[in-house]
Figure 1 (tube, rainbow, N blue to C red):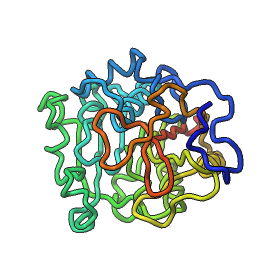
Figure 2 (cartoon, rainbow, N blue to C red):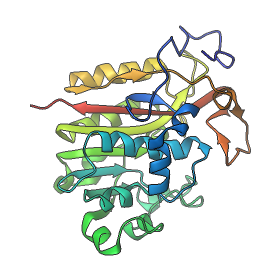
Figure 3 (cartoon, rainbow, N blue to C red):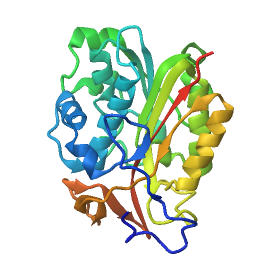
Length: 290
């Protein structure tokens, strides 16, 4: 396993002989280069109107779509909820498959000054969610609803009429921006409570590849450690949710490359953020059927 960028203060190696993760059979797992060679990766890139490239953000979209498709959630009669959607293609992708979607993002007055608006990572209305023309306009109009919501105050800002239950919930690279590791865990638990029995939530975020002890916390971007994800899994289990973890970080040349600012458009699986190396990690959990 690649250990070159692991700090000596890690409580244990962050990848402990687990099998390389497969996109075809997704669990809670990290972004790795081998997944980008799979048929499923090429398929989902085509569906979101992108050419495959070695980029963790593209992997996040493909991973979320694959998790939900594998669980049978991208189909007519399914109801989904997305958080921090920005201008990502997922709401349109899911609506095109017949699912009814409530897409949410932070209100503009709250997002001002965060950089999300300036970098086109914030949604002001639902029209921006189908810029790529992924979903036929009439179907998009019927299947997608948009409203503002605060991920730190779901119950207060989502509204009583939108408290679920939902068949699926997702977010892409969002809950690491809630202010702390503690708030990130609270968000996961709150989304678990909105799931219908048999429903699934899938969220991508930051994974500290350098340490299982020291990390970046109480900041605009936090880095979750292996132990944090394991704690989240334990807390979610108390709410009747199940998840399986694979912490393998890959062993191909691209998995060893650490991108430095200003970041690359093409070779961007792991990157340096302050003193740590981070990559994308997806956590998926299912609420047990009653």
